[in-house]
Length: 415
Image (cartoon, rainbow, N blue to C red; front, side, top):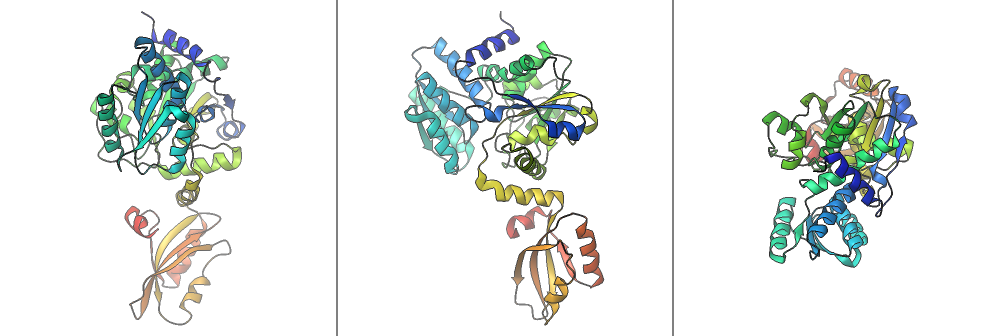
């Protein structure tokens, strides 16, 4: 029986008929910052700007080899998996029916349609992904199609392992540390299996978004569990339940090697890589770079590979990303100010602002009080330390205020 490494090598070779290997690039900016030799495996530069094309190609190829008459493939996805399946459907000349939530942005729908052309039909069903998935599976069973799982499939896992094959082919010596993003586990399981066999000395670090730590939860429970809720901001990796097949590979991972990345801090990485390096990453694609700060001591002097898993970033999200990054770094704050209703009160407040403090939001929240009014104020500044001085001046002037920057409930309704 062929072992996993041989299978992954053969799969990777067949993949070259579809697209060339994605670049493995040394990043001087990150290497200098962390005193390490840091390389980025640029899955954001695949034909569909994510690694998902790999698993979809291998799964469809294997199914067609076993059942040549199978010409209908079905999936449910609002993002990268849909685009990978669409691309591969056109490559093999088969029909694909892709179910997407009604709330899917038009940009993602359009890209999926472009990749699939006449070989793909898109059906928008359900406000939430669970409804979309149920509809897709019901249709698949009725129509006699083959359902392509985004991660919990042996053939998909084999396909994603091709990322690991290419890394070891490109580096003269294996990396000391490999940093992998984790969602449903297809990429991390495939790459872990390959590295365990071909480079067992390489340390592997796994990164999940803080709002979707399904691997960490499964390791605690000893089996996959469903998270009660997830934050969907990192839509390429925020999964409520890791796959059964993928967890079978990852169940022996040391929980200390599974890190979580806060969503607001991920925004900081997205902006930094865009502004400094000109690299466009989606939130899931920024996960592996984002935790380098947490690993600073561990990576110093080492050769490190970070997998940038996707670059399907909708630039309509850029204002939100900038906002969240500023709040995380402390250069933007929101607070509610109790302002006396008298002439000169506003001027008194404005006089307390520093030379680098800029008002970005000013809104009366309540106008019925005769003596005081509540004002929502947003302030941007050049250095987080400037707020220390501002709040001291406000206290000295007896202004009453409440910092709501990190209050999720108030921020949701007011900001």
